[in-house]
Length: 200
Image 1 (cartoon, rainbow, N blue to C red):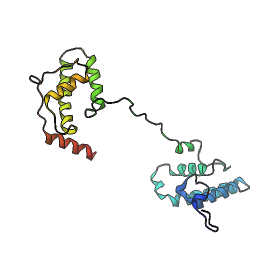
Image 2 (image 1 turned 180 degrees about the vertical axis):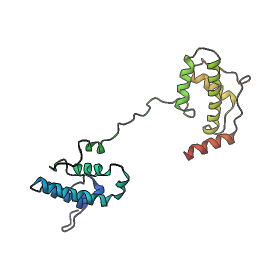
Image 3 (image 1 turned 135 degrees about the vertical axis):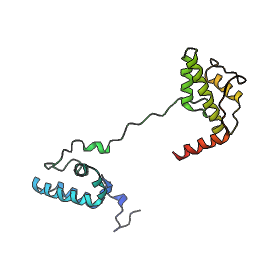
Image 4 (image 1 turned 45 degrees about the vertical axis):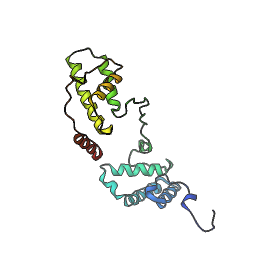
C-alpha cells in the first residue's frame, strides 16, 4: 500500500549499520559529498562523536575509537575519501560470519546412550583383552545403566545393559549380568543428574 505523504522505513534504503540510526547515515552520506579532504575529515570527526552518543556502551571496549572509525568506514560503503586516523583495512571482519560447524550426520542407534558412548564402544572393540579394557567396559556399563534410568523411563535392569553393550559392540563384548559388578544406581540419583543438566 502506497499512501502519499507517509514515509515508511520499509520503503527506504537499507541501513548498513542500523544501531546508529538513519540520521547518522544521512550525515555520512553528506560527508562523502563534501568537496575537500579537510572538510570531509572534520565532518567525519563530528560524526564519530555523535556515533559515540548512540552506543555509549562501546566505551567498555579498550579500542572503542578504532571500532567507531571502522564502523564509519563501513557506513560510508568505503567511499569516504579522507586520511583515516586509524587503520580501517580490517573493518570488514566485523561483518564476516563464522564458519558453519557441520552437524553430525550419522544416526545414533541407541539415542539414550548418546554419541560419545557409541564412539567409546568403537574404541573398546579395537582394544586388546586385558585389565584396561575390562575396566573401561565396567565404567561404560555403569554409565549406560545411569543413562537408562535417566532417559529410559526408569527401566534399567542389568540384562538390558548387557544386551545393549553386546549390540553396540557387534557381540565382541559380552558381560554376564549374574557375575558383573554394577555400582548401585538409584532413580533418585538419575533424577538429580537430569536436574543438573537442566541448570547448565
